[in-house]
Image (tube, rainbow, N blue to C red; front, side, top):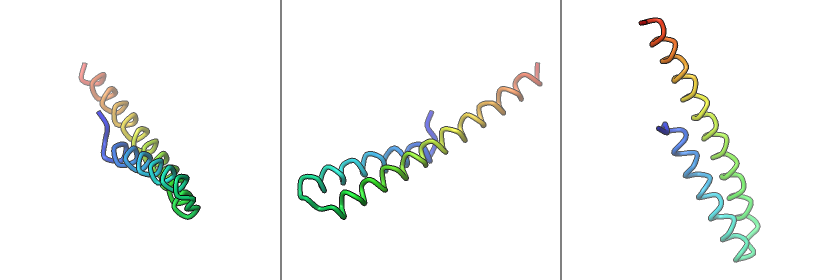
Length: 68
């Protein structure tokens, strides 16, 4: 299950790709660059969220193992 950072990051990635495509179609270099930056930021946020989720799962696994 995705957490907030993963979902928001993925949304930013998609929005960034759309902006890049719109910038390409309209020859708007500023919009294209903005889209590239937003996509990159989204990837970072999504990966951070994924790492945070994995750490949380590992902690839960340790807790479950200690209960046994």
